Length: 313
Image (cartoon, rainbow, N blue to C red; front, side, top):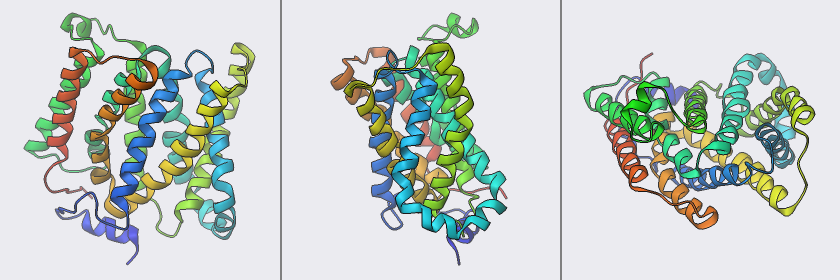
């Protein structure tokens, strides 16, 4: 039985498979969480020096170069499969590569790295919804609690601001990014089993960069380029190699082994990791409101992701 067949079969009945089950899935998820936490900090650090679209484009060009030596031969052997499932691969590239990371970079222009990490912590519940899981009473309560935490963070604790839709633009960009990534993660459950992980990464990276290319040209014309220095090249290499090639491989493999909902639990760690990194590297401080929102979001996603996992066919 293939990995895909197993995931679809097990999705029809409750399962209590722990996050760490599978061949190294737990360590892969931990690696992805820590590395992606650093990418939020990098996106915030680059907001004054590299336009968001240009940062996203070069991230995926670097990722493509990093993964190509390991994936080209296998991708060539599977080229017929990739062509047959081109629509699926293109949609995955659009959501997870082109849209998600561009929105993260755009969010970093006007919101803090800590806020980005906390809003992204709502992803497990969003992934559960997009993966078409049945939401029982406990999961519904968790969803509401996490949503209250996100909305409180967006409106800075002011109900009046919520009614006026007076949010920080960057927070809204980050919320849109979380929705995009949740859709991508849920979509991975449908990946054809015969397409290998490395060819899939190579194809999505290439398509994602291609889709970004026209917008990149517009950004160059309207905003100009950016200066090459250790302060720009170093962070771009980090997000290209570590946050893209390495972390996406670990994340996609974990989802193939244990499913998107269980893999999504890793986001419990991100608000803490991002807060510590942003304090150490950027000097950002976490105030009482952010701590309250962090507690609400983490409590909500913990409650929402607990219990058996059941999907709707």
